[in-house]
Length: 273
Image (tube, rainbow, N blue to C red; front, side, top):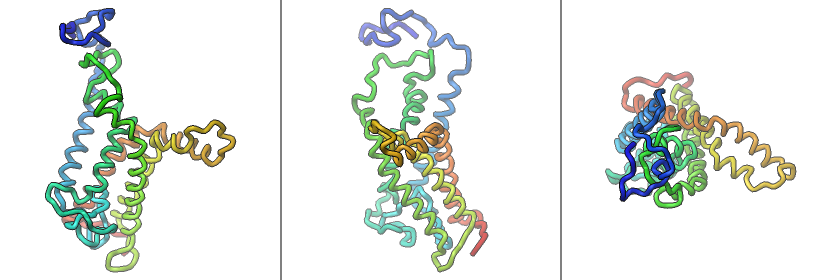
């Protein structure tokens, strides 16, 4: 990396006391593979989710009551009435997704997630891209200024995400009762149920959830219930990264399955009803 110019603030790797190395790094391994894979994964989900959010069709299977999580809760006046489990009160505008009430909060919950922060800091902003690889930024302010100061509101987005998980759970349970009456069970029900379980696993493994359960306790022995909750969440928290990526995949798969059945690309495999 070239030496800092006169108008560039000499901080971090550009400090006068640091060795002046022309190369960006002396590493010989493929250090760029990890950020590349992360970028491709993020890009795939963002493109797919954006396209689906604004398609405004093939989100509900009327015959079996399947509602994709990408459109839940469906509160637009343009939604199919049977898919609107919580009413219709948002205007039907082409630029407004049917699930506009939940999508922004779910996006902010993911963006401010402790794992996702580290992932896109390294891969997107390259701050830093990898260990022993100089970042292209001459100045670092942390999460003390806009827009990164918003990261500190992660706990509040967690509360909203938990409520939306309850709504997704309700959608999955309702789908076992066919709109024309009676109990029904098909592959779509299984897909919706697995997706909900994994979403709860990701949500409950959140660092904020762990702190809500056991934070600010001086004596765990005086709070056995909260201590038990804290220990269980801590076990999930160890694999928070894994659940974060798995749920991105299961969300897309669940939505694709509902879309495919709704569009008539293939029938739902029925076990009962």
